[in-house]
Image 1 (cartoon, rainbow, N blue to C red):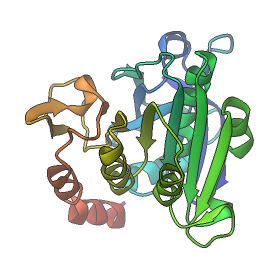
Image 2: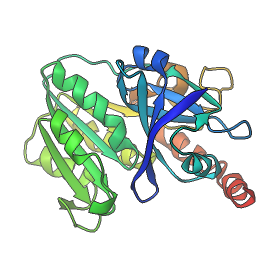
Image 3: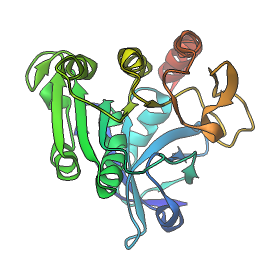
Length: 271
C-alpha cells in the first residue's frame, strides 16, 4: 500500500520513517496526522506528519517504540510496504503572523513541531523552539529545527545539553525574565502539555496543545479519542488534535491515558 523509502533509528527507541505516499504529501499541512497499519494483524496507530516532499511524493514521521504495533514497525525495512497508510487527518495549525511563537516539544514531539516552526517562520513570526529529552543523545533533528527557528533552546533532565530540567522549566525562566509570547504550542506527552498550559495561564498566552488521546479509526466514528474542552465533549481526531490548553479538562485526559495500560503490557508480551 505504501512503500518505505528510508527508515532509521535516530535515537534510542526513536525511529524516522519516510514513506512513498504522493496523495498524502500533496495535501498535508502542519499539525495533521496519519494512521499507519504495518500489517493486517496490527492496530491503527496515529502518527503526526513531521515532514513531506511534494516533488518526491513522500511523507516522513517519527515514532517511539513503546508497544506491540510500534515494535512491528521497527522490523520493517526499506522497500517494505505498510498494510494501510491513511491521511492527512485532523485539522492543521492555524498559521498566521502573531509575533513571537514558542514551540515546546519532547520525545516524538520534536519531529512534530518541525513543520510548525517552518510554517510560522515563513509567515514572518519570531519562532523560539524548546527541545527536551532526558539526555543529549536522545535529542534529534537539532540542525533541522535550528534551520527553521529563530532560536532553539534545549533542556535535558541530566543537564548534558542546555538547561538541566524540562522544557517547561526553561520556558518558565524565560517568562519570569520578561520574554513575551503571542502564542505557545506544545507537543509531547500529556504531562508536558499540561505543565505548559498551567504555566502560561497566568500570563494569558494563547496556548495550543496537540492531544494524543487513545485513537482507533481517526475519523470520528468510534469516540475513543474523546476529551472535554470548555465543558464540551470533543473528538481529538476530527475536532483537533489541537485545542486550547487552558480549556482542556486535564484530570480526565491524564486518568484516561492509563485506562489500557495493563492490556498494552499483555499485548506486547504476547507478541
